[in-house]
Length: 156
Image (tube, rainbow, N blue to C red):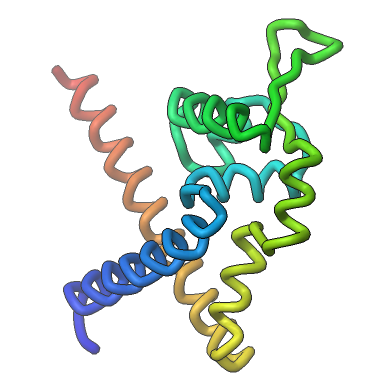
C-alpha cells in the first residue's frame, strides 16, 4: 500500500463489508444496524437522555429520537421522565430487549467480536491502534479546519 488513496479505498471497502455483515446479522433479528447500536449502548450504559445517546453514537438528536420511536413500537426501549428534572427524558432498554440479547446475541460488540475472532490478538491490536490513529488525525484535521473557518469568518 502506498499513499492516502490506498488508505481511503481500503477504509471504504472495509466499511462496506462491515455494513453488509451487520445489515445481514441484524435483519434476522428484525433490527437495523442503528437500532442495534442504540440498544447496545443502552444495554451497556443503562438509561441515558437522548442527547447523551446521540453523542455516544455520533448521531443527531432528531435521528436518535426517530430510532427510539421505532424501538418503542417494537417494545425494545422505553422513555421515562427524570425524577429530578421533568424536562429530561431518559431512554432505557426493556425486558424484551434483555431476552432478545441473551437469546440471539443482539449486541453489536458481541457480534463484532465474533467477526474479529479469525484474526490473531496481535493483528486485532494493530488494527485497533491504526484506527485510533486515523480517528485522532481526522479529529485534528476537523479542529484545524474549524479554527480556520472561524478565523476567516472573523476577518469578514
